[in-house]
Length: 327
Image (cartoon, rainbow, N blue to C red):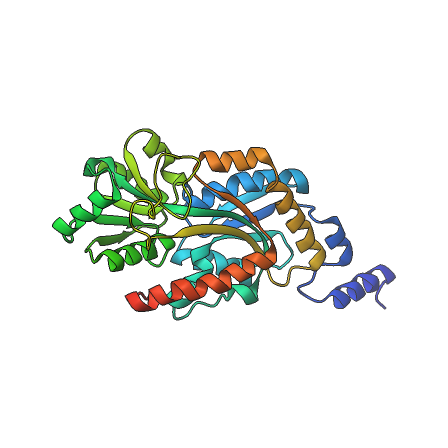
């Protein structure tokens, strides 16, 4: 005969099912540290946004949030890990950039993740225009100068990106198509590792988030030619937008959001959403982002879902027209 206590525990386990958290565990969430997984190398744009957000959310949740990098395949490795390889209990989250959700489904034949099916948005965090940046060794000071140089020297400019199919890469394809110029794309394993080669002059050009290059820009090792958005960045108010510079078709705005597996219990998801919303109302965190050229932008879960839908159509067309594919 099974002892009474054991029968009780077995009955509870059967009732909640193999992948669910008991009601008391949901009510007490969190009782241990949480992981936020990112799909790119440390020091890149996602990492620079994820760490201070994790610190701020930790205060509200009363538990440490550890940021873990699982770089590779434009974030697919990290997304696959969180969607399919860990319990959907709220203790493992995924921080994405827009390209992971809107570009990867068009780039990879065998990608398993569908973001609007496999993930539940917690909140949107940033919405940041990309910056057109050059190595100071190149000796150009305006976007028009850069285009003129590229036309006079076809195939001699090297463009660094955080990987094939990233927003940086697609921005280059948009730029090349619009201006009919020949620039060589050199993908890296994340944006951070490309910065030393930009400083050294081995790479000449980037269209990417300002944040990870801010130190090199402040040191005069890199130069920002234009902001690829509709408004100037408060961190560099003297730098014109691409529209102001006479290149209205070069508009590329990156964004980030925090996600949880779609089957995380509703009370846990609500707790995480409230912690993220509270973090994104903290002026200290928002100032930290702005000073590094990142534009904070809180979005509701519904707004994140709509953004994924709309931008998938926009960037999917660029990917198809450029013939970009990945295995």
